[in-house]
Image (tube, rainbow, N blue to C red; front, top):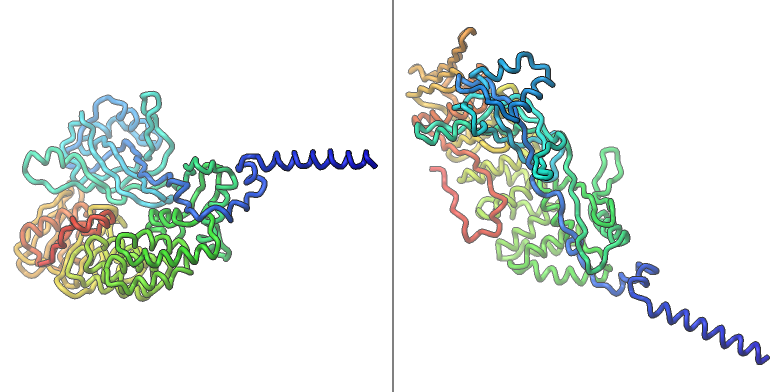
Length: 552
């Protein structure tokens, strides 16, 4: 009996030592045994506390190509690495007599540079910059056309530049600044831009990189982030079902697919994702929402509060709607912005008013209206195209085109072998002629029946002459050696003149130069604006904003 009692005592002592050893282990070991246990004791924190965005820099890609169709202003490039690269590319495309082509004064070797934006998709277009090398004897690229060439990233490895993989192609008519008749022309005429001339041939990958060291993130940590993000965001598939936006590729980073609602604003998408809590009970979420409502009503904290509410999703709609009743325009704006990305129509009227009156927030308001994409947002954008400011008008046009590219009001017609768009928009107020020199080749006439007036005589590039004949018509002529002369007679209406110019082979740069010459001759009553595009960078610079110039 005594032996049994002794055995029992020894056994109990051994067990107590074993249990005591476990209780003395580090907390990390305990969490690995029961990972769900930390949810109860750990307060809610956000994806953004543990991650930083990766892949949100513009990526520079380059190429060497050939500008053709120059009016004797080109040159034969000297021996160089760039010349060797161009000859190699021409040979790969089977171009006959490449040396002879390079020596022709109607051509010039050019260096092409472009920047792929974050979240770029295969087929997306971007602007490319074109310039001649410093040792070139080319005097002007006016009237030139950039031949197609591959574009690649350039990487410095051990002090030497190396080409990366092909990431885009470039081609199109070169837009050059107007001549001024001063020494400045020596610089401006040998560089230009091809609007939308770059075409991406690859998709970029957006990532959230894990950076926190305090929690020593492991696979479990990354998977919890993936789960939290996908609980909030999933992409509807055409055939039914849904696709997750986040994928934990390793312990160190997650890959993100941009949700379609944010397709034109991937930066905001990542900002919202980083506001998603990783650990939060229902009770804690309700408690936080009560706090967020108070913060939303304070202009200094409204931006972050609205973003966190947007990250919560549909459950936060009533809280955000309370912000629409604020007397402060900043609070109303941030609440409406988040509501728009949650598909709430009540945001439209507030966003429309902000876009009309608040210069610093206009670009963001228009972007939110475009994302809302319902009848109320459509009507607000339509009304803004009657606004007294050029930026509000064209900004609304551009937002509506992003929302519904095939809508007859903004679709327009492609001219110049489908290289630029012309659109005539019926609207009230003073007529306006708007052209772009960034991102897209586009001419928009706000107001129908805009007309030139005599006298008008323009001698443009590529042997194009535009002249008012004194009989209420305009005669457009083009003379090319060795080819039959071309001539068109049209009315004084601006849109008819632009169509006739395209019909005889004028490029977008040719048309822009002719329009600017007509403006300089006071041959057009309409207001003329270039790139009146609302900025998306001045939201925190309201105190420095400049007043819009009214169209007088």
